[in-house]
Length: 189
Image (tube, rainbow, N blue to C red; front, side, top):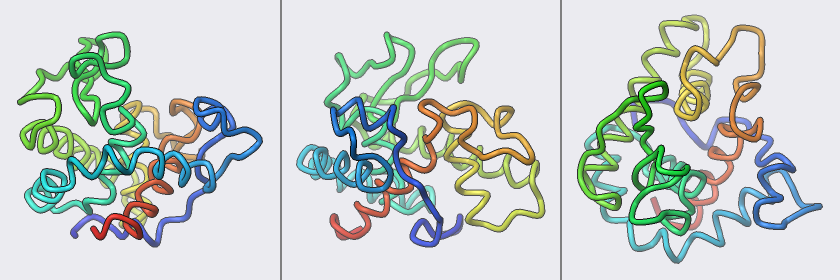
């Protein structure tokens, strides 16, 4: 995998805000992220084949794709005919279709290899943007910054601030990393 090592990225896991979505309080942090990944694991198993193929095509750790899928759509459980975020995002990885957001045109069915490749390539694009913006960061910092940018754009990853300062729940990359680590250990990616 060309873009850092998910297992070596430090994480604080889910914020109390994110944990509250599953009524996990007072549990938060890595334990909450792991619990949410575990809740999604049976649904996630349906997609391991296409996750692995998308990961191979894009040279990204499949566990990271699973972590994003868990956070974005709860492995499809939060979608209405493939749509989430009140019709603003498409598919398992929730590609932003709004003109003022990502402005992407959905590719493939919401649960297809084509969708996962499109969404993973958006993540890879952000890795490049974060590399250019923060050339002194190492590969793992670039990856964590790109995960945050996947949620809210690279313009919101600011120097001298926590990469999650402007993300949904204030924890997006930390939560995704914790879920991805859980999937790495428990889904044989």
